[in-house]
Amino acid sequence: MKKLLSTAIATALTATGLLATSATLNTAAAEVSFNAGVMSQYIFRGVTQRDSASINGGIDYEHKSGLYAGLWAAQVGTEVNPTGHFGGPSSSSMGWEYDIYGGYNTSFGDLGLGAGFTSYQYTNKITSSKAGFDTQYNELNFEASYGPFTATVNPGYREANPGSGSKDAKYLFTSVKAELAGFYGLYGYWDWDNNGPKDGSYLQAGYTTTLGGIDLDAAIVRSSKELNVVGAKAGIDEDTRMTISASKSF
Image (cartoon, rainbow, N blue to C red):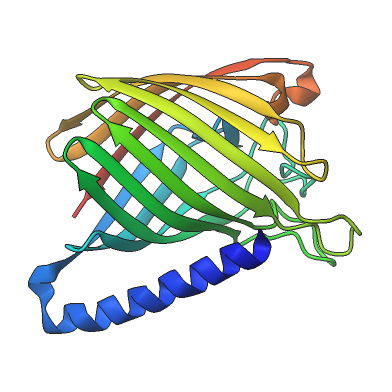
């Protein structure tokens, strides 16, 4: 799995480099955009990454062929349970997460298909000599959509803590989402091997809209106790949180 992901990432980055050169000659064939935003708290796939306001932003490159690449970053860290997901420092500020991604999207009538990769990195990374927020995750991304429904399948692995003697933890994240007139509902499930945390699931319901060029999203997330890394020490099993985000692309 790790070798496959590394090969896919290297191939995609090579293709992206070639496309960037081509875009210099034909800017009409590609588009570069930037985005910036803020979230009341950062919840990703049912897991709280930061339980206070998180600033985020990124850059995206899209080619008319369907190829894309990008970089996105956001503040991480928790205040209720000030440790990293796998045992970080006692601090409410734990640096930044930055995601490097790329892939290809296409469509056949109402059927949309996509394939790509994402590498999740952290500025305050766990090392053999320093506690940190987390290590790194690398995964493949597969997506299919039809009408209001979207399904994703994401096989990947989390790098083992350096010096811990543990092994990389493989996982499979899957989700199903339905949308209607700005409202949406989503179910996601984490399936880990024996080297990772316990399997867990979550439900998310929300509403998205655009006002004055600003994209708004309000959602309620209900996470199973296995994904509740913030409230676990307080003896809370399942956890329900609300998050609001605003972002603008330019």
